[in-house]
Length: 104
Image (tube, rainbow, N blue to C red; front, top):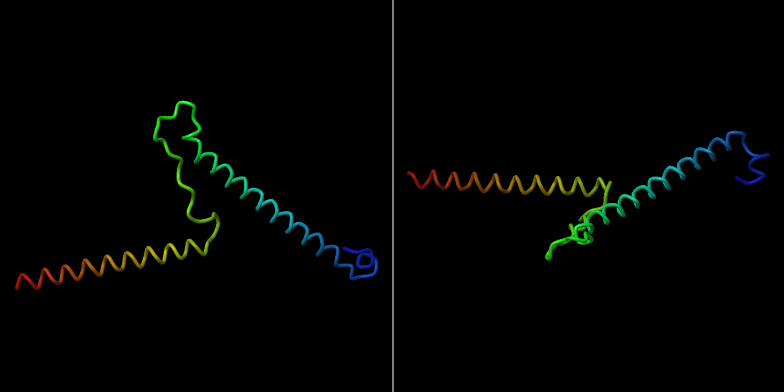
């Protein structure tokens, strides 16, 4: 907030600037937490091979396929699962119909 905005502007502006600063701080905190979560999981995934007495052939856990907190990807995955389930049900029903036809 500039000097002129503070002294000569609308008296509600400081409230909005404080709220905007709180939102920015909250977002920065969330991003830092998310980065820490990725780092922590990366260490945990690599820990089986970093163990001093790890057996030969030990492999790290695979890296996650999708980022955390991405709701768009979750809905796409759910739609893919529903589509696959529908296809399986259709194939089962068609095989049931064909087996019924063969019995006649």
